Each structure stands twice: as structure tokens, then as C-alpha cells.
Length: 253
Length: 239
View 1 (cartoon, rainbow over the protein chains, first blue to last red):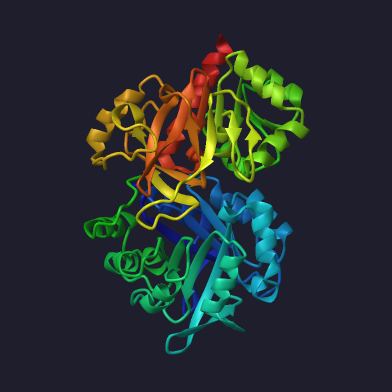
View 2: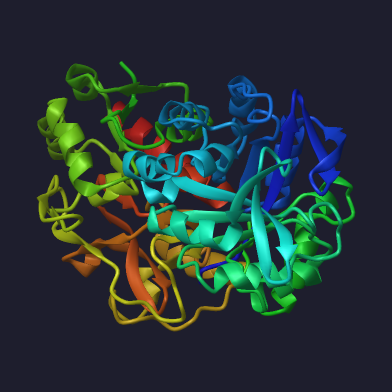
């Protein structure tokens, strides 16, 4: 049975995992390698590790750190942060990534997506979208860790990326990120309605029930979780148990 | 001489395969050199990507004969994902291409799937013992219950194979749009159902083994397959 993925996300700044609210006001959570191992042991189905300041500061991520995060894990890894070129993607893959998430530079140079799909395969290329509500039923795609306007309508931008063949969408609600009030179900529904590829929802996970709703009502293919794990409010088995109680197929590690 | 050589034919994430093998043995190398591959006691064909690109990657490095010779000599060969697909005779991704032909069969695209199942088939899915799933590949199998104890019981059909110790119903990590279609049902070690369609997820005959999923990415159950293969390779090296 095909199971729904629960994916912890590590936002990395310098040597630390950090977490904020609305992608701002970042607090240090801990050591990336230790947290990655902890979530693997708890039964994470994948892991996302993002250097969240690389594109803002226009520098390369710490590939040695990225490599050591992956060293003890035997689950798929999505990595990202500051990707500007096929060369950068290759560096992430060499550091142990199975997939890379691209946002900022793709909004300025969309052909990067189609070139990346052609070179590395669709399964490897994740479009990361940081969506912020601009008016009822509309969202703008933000960049640089939710800081900068792209001027692009998020839904139109996703349609373009789908045409370019990306393999997965990592959908972050800037409005809901870190708030622990549940996912932005309206945003999720708008995206899953048009996407014929897996959609990973991120931003606002509150509890197991909010994860179950995103899957059952919002048709998310995977749920991405940060704050409630980082602050030890829940462990992964608790969240999966609630999902299973709502008839969602989950992986028993 | 390394006992296990990961064949680097220029495609896919070879590092994760290396990382997983190194958990069980340090006697492992990564090479595109025909001589080193010839001298190895066992081979791993990793890979991800298109069928033709994979065969071309082997061809330009002069590795087609090396892999075939290793198979003929009875050396254990583990194909992963694309590497598993290349073991068969033909692939139909972007055309029609000749494979290594170590096992009879073909690699074909998923048919239209039910329940809104998307391709590529990406993510975690369970594997079942083909011996206990009554229908042949392509006909759909009944939903299996997934109690852990029962999984161990059903997994007994895998005793003596590379899947020994893996629970039936264990989840593995898949990324693919094309699937393994061996000619002989006896070469199907495990099956998986996706979108109402059942396909071979592990194939094998003697020393030749192919996993459609990524055991090196499939958590503790997947790593058990790597462990089993390492032991198979070590035994082969002693012979």
C-alpha cells in the first residue's frame, strides 16, 4: 500500500537548525546532525534540510554539513538553499541529496527548472514555493526565505513549473509557518487541484489531526513538520498514530 | 581487490549506495574501470534515470561485457532501481533499447492507474512475497493486512533469499515510472501494488538480484537487504 510521507524539515543557518514564525524571528533549535538522526530513529519517512540564508546572502551552503547530515540516514533527503545553477544541484547531489528544492533563482530564471529536469530527471527536482496571501483566494510567491516579493502569482507560477516538468512541489505557507494553527487548507486545495505531481504541504502543522486533515481533505501527498517536533510537543510515532486512526496509510519503520 | 564494486556508469546517486554498503563492510569500492570491475567478487549496479542513458553509460566505459561475464561466472550482482531494470532484456523508455539480458523480461511504463495514483510512483510502498500473492503481476492483489507479527510469518517465504529477515508488507522507497516485467513468474521475489496495479518489486535468479526500490533509502528494513547482499558477496568471495 502506498503510504503518506511524514517529513521533518530542518532549516539551517550557520551550524544550527533554526525555526521562526512566518519564516522570521529565528530561534536556535539545535545541532542538525543530531536532530536528523533523532528524526530518522523516530521513523521519519524523508528529511528536508534547507540552508535558509544561502540565497539571501548569495553564498553557497555548507556542503560538508549537508553531507554529515545524510551520513547516518537511510531515508531520502531533499536539500536546498541558494541553488543558482546545474552545478549547484550537482554539488547537493554529491553531498548526498536525492532531491533538490529550488525557489529563488528559478523565479528569476525559470529555464533553470527545465534544464535541471532534463539533466537530473524530474524525480530529483522539487519546486519550493513560499506562498503568502495577497488577496482572498490569491497568493504571491515569495523568495529568499519568505523575505522578498517575486511579483508572481503562486498558482500561475506553479502551473509554469509543472509545464517544465518538476517532480514535486514543496508548498510553504508563509502566513501559517511556525504558527502551529494547522496548515493553510485553502492554499493546499488550490494547489492540489492543479498539480499532477506530489504536493508536500509545509507551514502550520499543529498536531496529528492537522496532518490528517491536510491529507484527507486537502489531498496532500506528504506532510512536512518542523516546530511541533523541534519543541518536543510531539514525536513522529504519535503523529503517525493519529494519521493511521484517520485511515491514512503510513509507513511502519 | 575489493569484494564488492559499485559500478559507476555515470548515473544516479552512487554515494547513498556506498554509504549503506560501508555500514556492513569496508571492502567496497566505486569504479568505472573495467579491470577493477572484473576483479571484484560482487557488483552493485546503482542508478536512477533513463534506460538508454544507463546502457549507454555502461557501453562507453566498456563495461557491458564485464557485467555479463561477472554474471556468467556466478558472481552476485545487485541492481537497484535503473540498475535492476538494466538486468532485463529490453526497455521501452523513450524508444526500444536492449538491456543486459541477464534475466528474461522487459521494462515497460505503468498502465493508466486507479485511485488518482500519479506517476512517477514516488514514495513508500509495501512489498509482499510473490509466493503468497495469488494473482500474477498485472492483475492486482488483495489488500494485505500489515500486523508486524503476521508480516514476519508471511516473510518466511523469503528465507534463503536476499530478502531474508524482511517482514512481508515492509515499506520500501520507490521512484520510478517504468516497472520490471520478468518473463518467468519464478523470477519474481516480491510484488508491490500501486494504483490497483501489481508489479514485480524484487526480481532474482540465483546470483542475479534486482530491486525496483532503493534499499539504501528504505530505512532499517531496506538496509537488511544490503546486509544480506554483503553476506552473499562475502560467501561468494570465499568460494
